[in-house]
Length: 306
Image 1: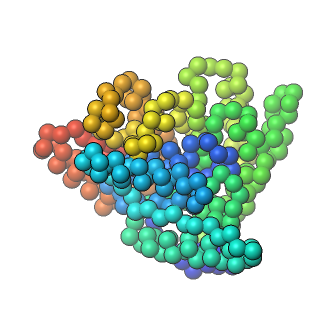
Image 2: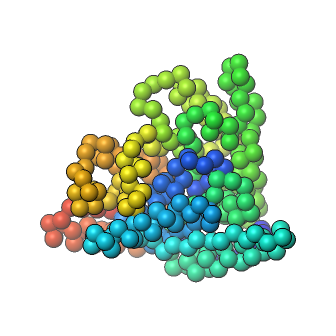
């Protein structure tokens, strides 16, 4: 029924899903940075939060809206939806209601937005699986540790070789198989190594080797993500990202080298995702860049994904 329903609802927007069954991996932070980067690139972006219990993604966007109003500054905002889970006694009825709520949000945005960014909960739910099965791009942030790697694979304790696929990897395999059955397309799966140490270590080397070995078996790409930086945590209360004009007005303090390094780091990550850009969006970004140049104002990061 799920495959048939998706097949009957053609999508025009590119769907980016942030997924991982391990909390604290940076899904919401990565999701908002992707959304804001695309907005600054002139794209029409909608966002969906499927974690209606924790709502980190929703709170991040609400903080951004509230701070923009309070500080009287312009901060790009996506069209946002938070889809509620159902907790009734009947699993079948719960899934039916969740599917209806999710379908309603998708129907409202799929034909008038270029990209939809979906943040999923850190546990196995019906809505999480549904989102994975319709992803054009799946981004799995992963803290650079064996504790987080366990979500993807099991390891030999002697030589740290990959011995099998874990629950999340198996779920993604099935979701990608369903996607191929629907329209013949293969979800582009990218595993992002977050909280990377700036120094070389045995752990960093072994985790990297394990991920590279698993990528060949599972068919995903592995890229470096965010280093362990305090600035990412400081962004959340005001809904800021590394792409915003970071000054005393927006930050409440003078920006430092860590803010600049974070921006370069996120730009490098986004360029490796190879997300598509609509031509209309490119023209909107170019026009805005020209306007900023004429007004002698600092340019936004309009060409991050160019």
